[in-house]
Image 1 (cartoon, rainbow, N blue to C red):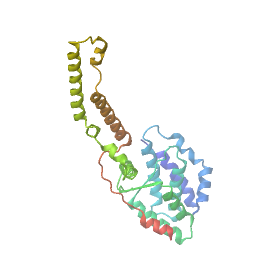
Image 2: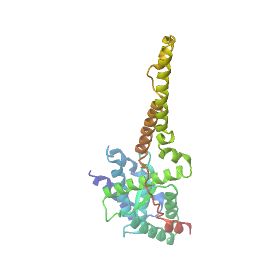
Image 3: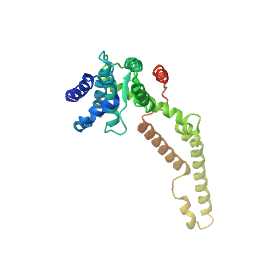
Length: 272
C-alpha cells in the first residue's frame, strides 16, 4: 500500500507551521482548516484501515519525537490529535505510542512548559483522559507499521480480557460460563432413572394387558423424548452458546493477563 502522498501532505502542513515558528494549537487548526486537511480521508483505502491510520499516526509521531524545532515537534503533536479527532472510523482507531515515544513526548511536555506553552500539556492530558492512546513496546524507529498494528491487536485483546476479568470478578456469572451443565444436572444419574422408569412403565402395561383392555393407555408406552434426552439437548445448546461467546469476544477460557501502567511518570508531570 503506497501512502507516500498522504505522508507528503502531512510534511507540507507541518512545514508551513514550523516555518512560521508557530506554537499554538489554534494556529495549527487555522492551517488545517485553510487546507481542508480533513479531506485526506476521502482517498483512504477500502481495506487495511488499521494499517492506514497507524501509518498516518506514525508519520506525525515521527515529527513529534524528532530532533527538530519546538514548533515542528508541537506541530506533530497537534497533527496527531487532529488526525484522531477527524478520522471517519467508528470506533476510532487509537494512537499507538511505544515506550520510547512516550519518553520523548515527556521531553516535549517539559520543553512546552519551560516556554510557557500551556496548551501542549493540556492537550496531552486530554488525550490521556479520553483514552486515545495505546502504549506498547514496538518503537517507531525499530519496528514497522505492520509490527505496530500487530502489537495494537495484542494490546486490545489484553484489554478485553482485563475488562472480562473485572466484569465477572466475584460473581456467579463466571461460574455459569465455566460450569459443566451435564455435571450440574447429574446427567448420568438422570439417564439411569429415565431408563428404569421406561422399563417399569413397559412392564406395568404388559402385565396389565393380560387381565384388562389396555388399548386406551398404550399411547403412554409410545417412544418419546425422555427427560435425560431433553437435558442432554439443553446441555449441547449451552455448550454451543458458550463457544459462540468465546469466539465473538475473542476471550479464551483461562487467559492470564498482567496489566502494566506505562504512563505514571507522564501523568505526574502533567499534574505539576
